[in-house]
Image (tube, rainbow, N blue to C red):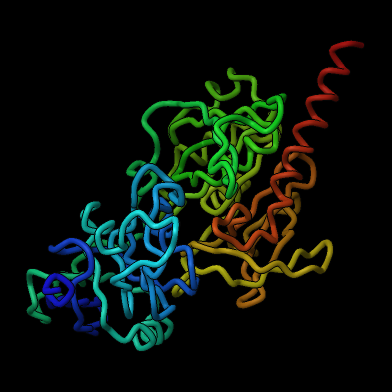
Length: 387
């Protein structure tokens, strides 16, 4: 019982300090403090590499109630810097649970805090913007921690992709999860299309969906030259999600430029921003970002509204795009860009997460759209060679 009651402090660069109790590992965690409005999916959030460099505050008051298992992970390990919750469930209740949230955080050396007023913290972040902050269980001097938080480098201008990408190329072979079989260990159909996926911090569920749709998937490190990717003769190239500011990831932007008009391209989240920069656009940082599973996005072509999962602090500047680029989706909360399409080449991208696990799944059709584009292009290329 005593491990749940060890004091902890969360100090922000704004000067705000919140006192609570330790959650997970003991020590200090540092990063940009953001809030996430999802009610479930905390394990997916913890293992989403896009949260590298960030401390996540869950706005839902009870977290950890269904525990943690080995299947609902989105990467090889947790990448979040720290976790802030109102109350962490001490006794998980789920037939799939293998351990508690506290034990999982402790095993992965993630320092968290519980027992604070997360509503007050969220209101503070909405008013002041996302803040650099520190969670500590070892230094409980508020003034010291605030000064440390103020000295932390911001996310702007930092390349965090290099900290999360894979080191070597690999083939992905797992399909989507089912209650009866778990994750299928082979594609659901013969893999007739080859997708090369750049790993800027890729989520496993993206790869699962491609495999389930009949694709052979090769994942490559973020710095892989475009020439090496084209030499693999893919029918399409995917640019993944990832953490932080896209602007300093200059190698990815240059590779994307070389791939334009050479092969169908699809980007999600950071991959979307990198494509926007490759097309001559600019990006900027939002005040407190979009993090959660309930953001409304409008598909401009159909007028339909999708409920989406989001996790980003930067967006493409709508006014920086040239005439060849069309905005396809808009965020209905603040009217920022959520989707792009090139008018002449086979390229489109989405700011939100259509692959979201555990959901929502309103936008999973975008994967089918990309697969259909690859299939049409492959058929046309085959036909031209037979002439």
